[in-house]
Length: 467
Image (cartoon, one colour):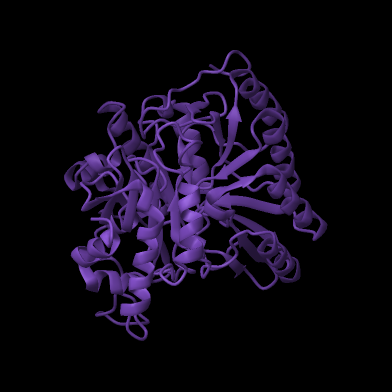
C-alpha cells in the first residue's frame, strides 16, 4: 500500500522477497525497510537518514552488497512514520524496476561510457509500461560502463557492459547470473540498447512473473533483439593492432570486488571508499562519519557494491576521511580480513537464522586473518538461503538444525560436504587457519592452497577432535 496508509508487511519466508520503504519485511528484530538511490546524495542527507533510523527503528543500519540502505527494528507504526519522513527529505530514491550502474558513473574518467542516459531511458520506458509490477520481485538490470567499480559479481537478469571496438563504443549483452557465468548474447550499438532491454523485459513479463533472464536461451534472445545484435565478425578491423588482435578491449578493474581505499577518478577528483564491517553499523557511528565528511568539504556520496560508500572530492579530503574511517573501525582496504567475509544478519536479527553469524565472522577476522588474504570469499550464512552471497564461494558455511553445514566451492543451498557440531564452529575455522599457516608454500595464496588440498583434506581438518 502506498504512502501513507497502513504499511504492507511482507512475511520473511524465502529468498526472492524484497523489502521496500512502503512494504517492509518481517524479520527477527522487527520490520526491515530498504531504499536505494538513483543519484548521489550528500553526507548530510545520509546523516539525516541515520537520525530517522534511530528515531523509528533500533538504530542499526545495513548497507547491502548492491548498495541499498536498510533500516532495522521497525514496528508497523514506525515503518509508516519512517516512510513519511524519508519521502519528506526529497532524495533521489529508486522506484520501480531495479536498474543499477556504477556509483561513480559520469565522474570516473576511466569509464568506457557514461551510463546515465541509457539508465534513464530504460527506467522511463519501464515505468511507463509498469513493467516492475509484471516481473519477478528481484529482477535486475545492470548497465556497466566500465571503470573502477567492478559490477561483475552482482547477479543480473540482463547485463550491458561497455566495450570499445576501434573508435566506437558497443555494449555486450549478457543474461542471467554473475558476469562470468552469464549467457553472452552479442554486442549492441548504443542507440539500440534501451529498446533491446525493454523488449527483453516485455518478453520476460509475458512469460510470467517468475521468469528470469537465465530462462532465455540464445535463440530466444536473438529473436527478441531482431537485427540489433551485431555480428562481431563484421566489425571493422582494429587498425592499431592488426587483423589478429582481439576485437574489443575493456578497462582494468580496481581491486576486483573489494574497491576500498582511495580511487583517482580524474586529475582533481578522488573517491574515498569505505564500508561498515560486515555491512552493518550503528546509525550513530555512520552519522558521525558523515558529519566528519561534511566538515572536510566532501559533499557527494553514494552507496555501491561491496557494502561500500563512495565519498568523492579532493585527494586531501578523501585521504583525511579514509584515515578517520579506519580509526573508527570501518573497512578501508582490501587487505582487511573482514572484507573477505560475506555474512548475513544471522540470529537473532534474522528470523531464519540458526547461528549468530556476526559473532562467528568477528572470530574469523581475528583468529583466521592469515587465511583471509583476499584471494577468496568466506561465506557465513545463518541458514540455507545464502542471502549474503548468492553466487558460489570457495568456503561456505550455513547454520542448520543438524549443525554447521560446509559447502566447498559452492552455494550454501547445495548439498553440504560435511556437517559440524554447532558448538565447534569457531574452533573448526581456527583449525583451518592453522592448516593454512602450516601447509601453504611461499607465494601461495589461500585460494590456491585450498584448491590444492581438496575437500577431503579440508573436511578432515575441520572435523579434527570432533568425531
